Length: 433
Image (cartoon, rainbow, N blue to C red):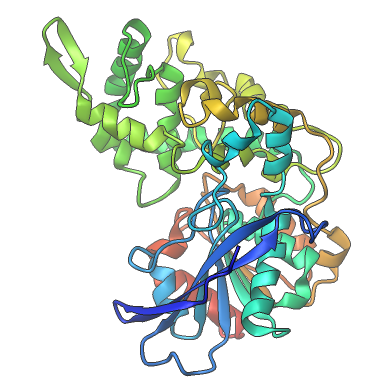
């Protein structure tokens, strides 16, 4: 397999260069199977010949491709004032070798082999990929990193595994628990998600009756989604994942207002509503998110064992069969989604194997973090639905020299919504704030 040469082009005031390189699937066996890695380097037009430092963008996820320059958030405009920005399609996503129901079909019915393959798509492998890319682009010189959400988790792994590769680290909404189990993560997450439900229904009080009516209708009717699968109440409840960002917090309200129309035999759910639900709850574009969402917290000998599913029982407010008002779940993945989502059905056996796995390597080196010498600054969002504030601050205290900015002015997507977020962090790193 020949590695393509870099390709450069101009787009909207930017000069973009596409890079591809091959990296080991398992970095412990560099002569074993390889996968392809894709990254796009972006620099402001007119500055392409300047020797600007590079900033690696590690996006949220897991399983989401890097933003494209024509749709990137506000952070990119600010970053380009000081850096060449590297947009890495993390392994398994975008133009890197994908990991989805199509490519994983080569394992057939061997769920253990599929799970073994997917176990190489966590933060530790992403960091080692990034190091290959850094050396490919600039040799031994370190670069800076901006980690958003799961990208922040990966940045802590970077500081643990290869701090020599980093000159500076910026983290937004992405300081994970370093030692907690997935149960600790989801126990805190359910409480925060309930609080965001209350915020939503306080803003749109009329939506409670409408959400309850949709749930009641789904409970008594066989309603089919565009791909043909049945829309269940519990899958409808997963629409609460939109509560965590400012950009999408209101989207459920505008979706619910399209819910019903008068059919031949009474109220029916509209095609507009069902297509909108499908777009929000389908994992067709990001199957790795579902398969790895709990494994990104796994370390040591304890399995995740479908943590979100088990811990949900501790929060009866989410039980739609109990007759109370509907409450929407958030950033949780459940075993039944691998039965109800056509994009995930082929991965069901692998997901079960991952949930039972006990041989996960450590993602964080606590001693190395305690002795950290890389300048690190982090934005901690006070009311972040996805990342627990108390976990984040405990982690900040465990990393030598890490400085935090705790703010209630932004939701989880603050760095995308307002260039002032990254500007504040860059100022902190320079000692200006």
